[in-house]
Image (cartoon, rainbow, N blue to C red; front, side, top):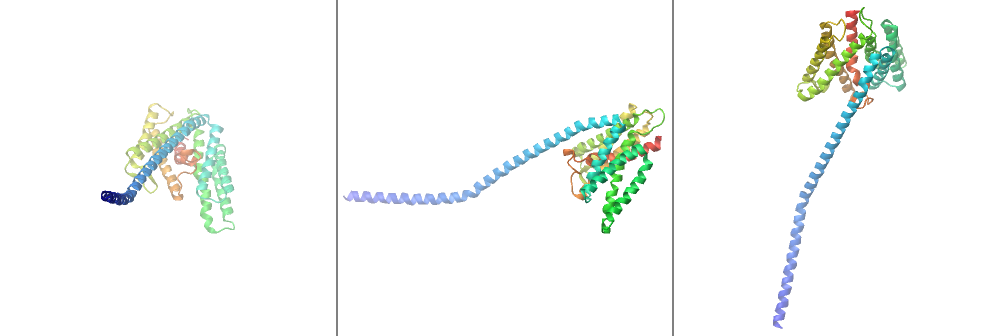
Length: 337
């Protein structure tokens, strides 16, 4: 019996120790769990950030690929159409320029926040009509039309309204000069009457050469500027443009002019004519791009519209031509007509 009592006492003591040990283990386990919670949360946070980064990178890559595809698609479709319309000339190319003026004017006036969609549309339609007036009626008729329209618009917008809207009227009227008359010069250039011995296709050859110079200039400026550019051309206006890219684009225009001179692309053009054409496109083409960039940055938009998907709007694609066209056309008039 004595041994039994001792055994029972020992067993109870052992169970008590085990219970105390279990309680201590639970307490330590709880402490460890509490300590491990922040570490677990950190691990989960890192995993979430990693997956988010991967997903963001995937979406950015996908968006970049889609953007590149859209750009290539628009170019593959648009360039042959434009070249064919230039070759056709006459009413075909003039109508194309009129549509371009309509779209560019609408984008330009919308950017300037001119009130009234109907007014913007009819003014854009009027600007498109200036293309036909200039092409079929001759340039002398254009300037009285501009003055008359300017006067009417100013009176309509100022009548019974505060004088502060005078600037708005001037902005609206300025669309008849840029982009309307600026792009009209392209239609006039296609149908220009050149000296005897020049065929009717010379205007098309001049346009082809000017387009080639501008496209090569833009392409080299973009790719070489992105790859090797370090000195910003105008940080406040267009931070992505560099002097290295601008110089590369300018040299590209000169090279295109040199190749055209080597193969006699335009009849009766001397080496100086090719050089001057390259200088105009290499300098004023990039200047036109900068001017439009300044306008968009002032207004706070990236593109004038989404008409051409990732290419932006019509004005985004024709800004260089809107600056170079009138200067090249004026040079041709002074030089040959």
